[in-house]
Length: 301
Image (cartoon, rainbow, N blue to C red):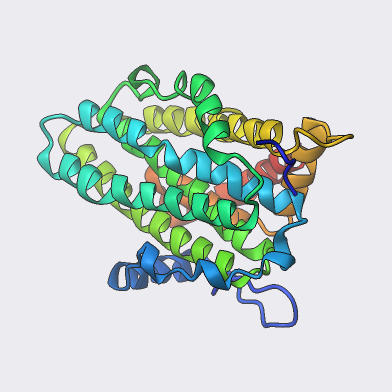
């Protein structure tokens, strides 16, 4: 619980059956999401089972930090539109679909936080975070070529798809499960768009596999140490102020990642990361096992 400062169709917890989320089933979820969009009016915030989740610090941290990141999507969108200026198809999609959907994620998660934890000053915390967060959202951090940036965007969307899959799996509050399912499906669909644009640029302005690997590696190494880390830190800073003995940030971070670790879909993450390399089936299968092992060590760290 914050301080007093003024279904996942793929993995179901409890006694309900579990279905493993594979790459193929994830793509199928994306197709269905495209046909069945959602909006804020679909969400029953009055039906949230607040007692079930209010005292769970880890879930507060996960939902709150995600709301911060999603709410900052407009800055990323502006940078990307500027970077891809002259490509009308991509710029139109970014402005008319990607940005509004990402911002809707932020609005939905913010509303959830404010409903479940009304004592938390979300607006003040977010304003405080922006002084640090804005330093990351600069065009200089984009890749040197458009094709590489599309590959990097695939990694970002992989990260969000798998994050919301894991968050959906560790929560048992029905409204939050619905929100995270919707967002996960959106993020998977966004991945497919960025991947399609990556393939298009490979025909127009091809980059080598080594350049793609470099872009993928740069973005993978940033996933846990950049905006996610900052968002978690500010959620903790503002969420636990006022407590007599607030937990240390290292403690709460370890608890958060410990909770998510058991439900993180490593196989899916590896497949989505490898896809821009366009390996043949044999090479891809050969690469999956060691990369999965590396991913597990990173999660343990």
